[in-house]
Amino acid sequence: MSYDAIIVGSGPNGLAAGVTLAQAGWRVLLLEARETVGGGMRTAELTLPGFRHDICSAIHPLGLGSPFFKNLPLADYGLRWLQPDLPLAQPLDDGTAVTRHQCLEETAVHLGRDGATYRRLFAPLVADWDKIAAEFLGPLRLPHHPLAMVKFGLRALWPTTTLVNALFRTPQARALFAGLAAHAMMPLEWPLTAAFGLILGTLAHRVGWPLPQGGSQAIANALAAFFTSLGGEIATGHEVQSLADLPPARALLLDVTPRQLLTIAGEALPPGYRRQLQKYRYGPGVFKIDWALSEPIPWTAAACRRAGTVHIGPTLAEIALSERLVWQGETAERPYILLTQQSLFDSTRAPAGQHTGWAYCHVPHGSTQDMTAVIEAQIERFAPGFQDTILARHTMTTHDLQKYNPNYIGGDINGGVQNWRQLFTRPVPRLNPYTTPLPNVFLCSSATPPGGGVHGMCGYHAAQAALH
Ligand SMILES: Cc1cc2nc3c(=O)[nH]c(=O)nc-3n(C[C@H](O)[C@H](O)[C@H](O)COP(=O)(O)OP(=O)(O)OC[C@H]3O[C@@H](n4cnc5c(N)ncnc54)[C@H](O)[C@@H]3O)c2cc1C
Image (cartoon, rainbow, N blue to C red):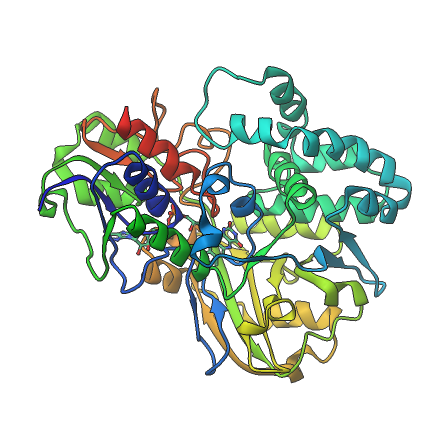
């Protein structure tokens, strides 16, 4: 059997590349090391029977906001997005919470004195999202929408701490923005971290922060089903060790990061390119916990019980310290935590009346520290009695994550640091970052622009490079 393209790895980007090539009429084979497809989009009973946990990704503003996914008939293949009552809540020490509503106006009203500033900051970005996505969710190029790019760029380039201190007067608004920007996994004093807060905040108002019914595996299953409906073939349980193991094809697209590319392509890559790949930087990791719970998390602030995602970190200072320490090889006593509670909005995740909880905090690259007690104490601070609701837990250190998925080097869930040096020029500065010096080998993982997240844009752009 001969193929036009072979794809290695079935994360969102591998599947997106496969779909794009199959749509163009190419004969495509996708090889995946594990027994199921999905990469960072798998759901499994990690704790107790009947409790279905998202092993990696959980909340998908980038999925629903993805210009690529938008054009696929994924609903026909079983994908149903659920919107929580509130995209986001963030509990504060006085027992209240600051909230982000899907409605921009409602969010602004809740921010009181900072409402007007919030409106001025986000309203133009929400209106311009399609243009911003076209410019920023891909490789650097001459802008097609220069005005939208300048409007976004003028704010996005700032360090988060500078931007929020300059714009907002209330601790609530500052904490809310810091919680978004901390998804960057970089110190909030670094330039460009504001971009992450702006994009995730804009998406909350434009498309919401949805979760797929049944878990993130539903996105993987829908993409895989659409891919096979187009004639694509999938072989799971097939780990590729070397390019030499692959049958000949016009194009090989690898959903792996530079370190694995170095192993798989070996000496076939020219020494100069190998040296550049060796310099590629991976960032901090995460420590992940899933819980089976006897009841919903007993948050003091009622708003947290209505939110799909809860950011734990009540002030800008506490979140900034947490992120800074991670880069110094340490962890905070009170770390910034990302928590989701899917079963509140999706009854398929847990037995009736019971619930799931999903959370992680950032830890130094390659850390083996067990953060269970620290994370649970942080939640208990804002939800007294939480520990009494735990029926079972499943934890993953950075080593467990990398063992589970070799793309998570040192526990880095974004396929490499996303700072100004690497965001648009990942994996190496090159006119077309998806190409390699080997004319038929392309990289399609989150180690290419626009980086981490379930959006499929890296795979889509890599497939375009292969087609051209
Ligand atoms: C704990 C956690 C939480 C996250 N939360 C979110 C979230 O809520 N929302 C969001 O948008 N994103 C989230 N992410 C990030 C998101 O999952 C990743 O950015 C995304 O999955 C990257 O996609 P990818 O296709 O580049 O690679 P991956 O999804 O990592 O897929 C790579 C695939 O390639 C396979 N593979 C690797 N090497 C080989 C080989 N040699 N041979 C064969 N197969 C191979 C792997 O098994 C894997 O299936 C999270 C990630 C983690 C770990």
